[in-house]
Every structure is written in structure tokens, then in C-alpha cells.
Image 1 (cartoon, rainbow, N blue to C red):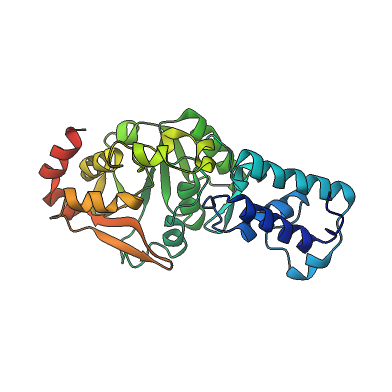
Image 2 (tube, rainbow, N blue to C red):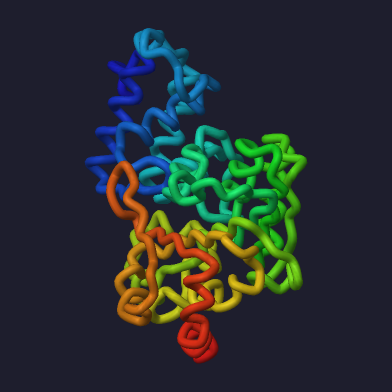
Length: 304
């Protein structure tokens, strides 16, 4: 046990140095070693994630140091994402319980939620919203939290993921949310929405095989979407017009599969969102544009 590690900031620095030296991969809520180390240290000390830096010079006890070092070693040895070690991930300013039943919340759609989906919604009055492939429920619950006047539905094929989403619904008090087990739109047949949002699986089989070990702890169901990553996205594009009200909006994250989608459907007017950090493979498309290209989209989706 390194005797020189005395304060909170000592242990945060130590963890970050160890993580970098071990060549860990970051990208599950945090994108660098220092932030991950901070998350782990503060969790072990039962302190808030936004602790005032003035407390960084506080001394830790021997038992606290043991607990912190234990988590740091597990992160290195087992390559478990920090969010799974702590059981918590922050998304759209909210704390979500997270574990291996669903992907760690990290979608850039959080930025859209916090901005009220502007300017993409314009003056569209949203009464009902749908989140497809909800996983931990982070997108749907955040929408329900920030828009208590919306009725939000959220669906997922995985019963395990939905169980986690229900725990998060209770944790964050979202009474205007309905959770349904469903293969995409199957359980909401005949229902229509003003806004449909989805962060579906969009990673190709080859890409999943090449992912760093951290991703092996996440459910494969939440990652893989065929040879080009578009199996689910195309089905969503095909079926969305039957579930969008006139003037409604569809927002879907496809990540690195953006290029493949544009090559398949060059004639479709996707609006690709520019986030604060740049493009992230998230498109917006309206009800009318979906209808205008429905035949071609259906042809491609039906072939999957």
C-alpha cells in the first residue's frame, strides 16, 4: 500500500496514473482517466460527485484507502467500466443506477434533452413521446423528468433492461413514464406520438469483435445491429410513419454507421446534429420526409 497517499487528491491522482499506465479504455460516461478516478474515489468515500475541490486535501483513513485501492485494482485487473463498479452514471444532469443489465448511459441525446430538443422541435407541441430501445431508461426518464407535462412511453426487448429502467423510474420519480417490453413498435400498435427518440444498437459484428475489454461487460443485445450496424435503424425508419403524428419528429442515434446510412439512402433529407463536441451520428427527420421515401426505406428494411 503506497504510504505517500494521504489525501483525496492523492488517491485521485494515483488512480488516474495507474489507469493511464495500464492502457485502459474510457468512454462509459467519462472519457479520461482523471474523471474515472475521481468517480471511483468519491464513490468509495460516499461523497457527492460534485464535491467542492477544497475538500481534496482531506485525509483518508486506512480503511477508506483500502476500499479505494481495491476498486482501482479491480478497474485495472477486470477492465470493468467505472460506472459498473460504482453502480452510478450521470446522464442529462441526473443520477442513474447502472449495471450489466443495460449499457452505461452515455448518449449525446442527453444534450438534446437538456436543450428541450431545440431548435429541432420548433413550436411543435409535444404531448406524447416514445423512446425505443430504452435500456436503463435514461433517455425516457430524463424526458419525463424535464417535461412533466409529456406522457412518455419507453420500450425495450430485454426484460432485464426494463427491470433496471423501472428501478430508475422509482429512483427519479417519473410518474408520467410507461415502460413496455416490446420488439421496437410491436407493443404500441396503433399508438401515435409527437416525438420518437431512439439510441438503438448500431455497432457492426466486426466492430464489436474488435472492441476493448471494457465493452465485454455490456450486454451484446444493446450493441450489435448486423453487418453494417443499421438493422434496427432501418426498421425504425420504416415503421415510424405509422406512429408519428403529422408534423412529428424522429431522432435516432446511429454513431459510426452514419456513413453507411447515407450511402444506402442518399436521397433522404436527414438532418445530422452538431453537438458541442461535434457530430455524433444522430439524425433528425420529420414525418413528411419519412413518408416521401417510405417505399425505398421499406425495401431496405424488409431485406434485413
